[in-house]
Image (cartoon, rainbow, N blue to C red; front, side):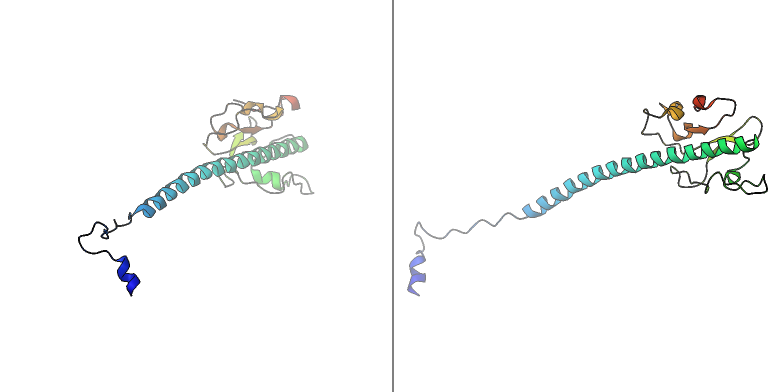
Length: 177
């Protein structure tokens, strides 16, 4: 007990215990809010990068599917000298006794997520190509292979027209503008 009393100063002395200032309140809360704001900004940037990556993947898929449909239209035309009337004709061709299949299935448009292709009509009936129904602006603007050179500087995927024109030679098979 004596020790306690020794530490205690007498009233009026210069060493009297002063009350401590209260600890700063709200500092942790402000730090937590700042951390949440920074995390939100980083997540928004990551979302944009992910979205661009997904769109690039869909572009690659669109190029693959469009070229497959163009090739199927060419094979269909070379067998019967006329263009198909519907996409289903490429999946199941009943013009001959043995059913032929130029496509395994009707592909969906990767940009819209549905089989809502825009059919490009041929002069003598049927359709000679397809295009996406999407109005999005393409990321890829250059660097297409020779069959897709006409896609350069397009302002929407609907301008990417996968056409087989029987009047042209194979090396001239580029889309119309």
